[in-house]
Image (tube, rainbow over all chains, first blue to last red; front, side, top):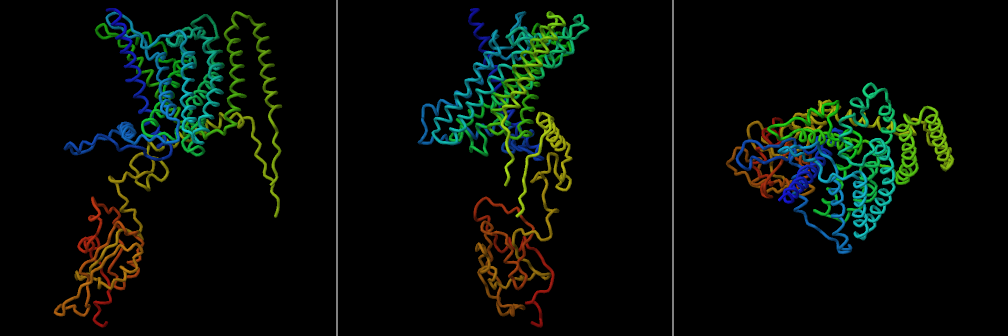
Length: 420
Length: 188
């Protein structure tokens, strides 16, 4: 009996969090993308599609800022002809869209959506699988989605998708390294790989990028400035991590695998109807997961901050702890805000050239992330090291950084100005 | 020809860092976004935009009072101040019409009519608005100033037959036009 109840709870979590929380975020972010890009470009965007109440005899149609637009788009994609060109390799062509969507949705399972919900005195965590290797699991699974894109490019058996697929492979592999290395300082600081524990620590002791309450403030912990000093490596890690997430999700400054102006549609040129929609969905789901990961690691996850979280967690109505739901709302707000940032970046920064992309990934971010690990370790170890060793470490860091910068400068090929 | 050597501008350290430029870009795009939200986009007032950007929301608001004097809309037939048909069905417009949108069936004015000296008037006058390209050649060629391009632009219909304007419809759009017309002139 207990087993059945446990299974039912897991099922409820899977369905609730994946299909009722993350998947609806996909059309919502598409809608936001269209409206936000519109107002950036002094346009209006889709504001008409609503519920056609006039069909049922009402006086006026109901168009709530065009919020029904994504549903109309979805319906359109379902009803379109699903055309399979004759020159494709069928099995892989059919497999590829699924391989893009599935990894993005599997990674949902380690994201902590809120604090515990208490039902009948039993606390239920708002996370599907409370793994002790959270970030590693996310990296392992999300990097699988490159198979989908590469297979799509190859199986389409035409040149533009193929170039898109190859570019995507190279880009994903390059930025996977920066992504993994940039998160190392964060994990060093928390000493834990469980995302729920990381968020709980941030809720109690201040977010990684906002250490202003709890134990991280010097006058609360007996004059320990570690948390405040750690802000520097944390910001560097944040910048590298966020940029790498952009690259991993094929978003705008790095959307070389599908850039319309160069490759028609990139890897999904030959796809139509729902198969194309699956790529679309996978891309946006990856965006949602990426931003929830950034929010979880750097911006406090579901915590509201300023020491209010313990009070929120204690809220309950008739033995049913609603604190978790409030925290979930906070988390969703943060994720949507970060998605809006994604969109702002897309409509601000022009696309990188391919060599610039590779240079940024391999030469700048890789080195910066490595140096950042050193710096973070030094900051964390400084209280135990004592002054002399710390200064020695800093000097070593400076020398290593200087040497790296010098090597970069020397190795860069000087281009002679071309006379016309 | 003089040789001009073009060199790339030297970037200083701040520009090489690239992040500053990105933030500048953010500020510019956000400025546009906020201006759009507040209906303060440049040109929004002139276009009578209803809130977002400079776009005029079409069915609620229309271009009508912004249309210039020379706007070429739907062609239509006009009557003079005494409600007499100006058209003498000379069929010049039918012949000049580049997409062959006009079809005229000429009719005779009976001899007992007070204006029998005009001799002809159109029995049928049809303009197929699916074909019409709004070029205004019919207006230009008409010797009697009987056909004009009016400012109507929303020509709609549920089937092809709806889009063919017959004589009644054309006079309805055209209305009255006051001024000298050759054929009513007693001296001519």
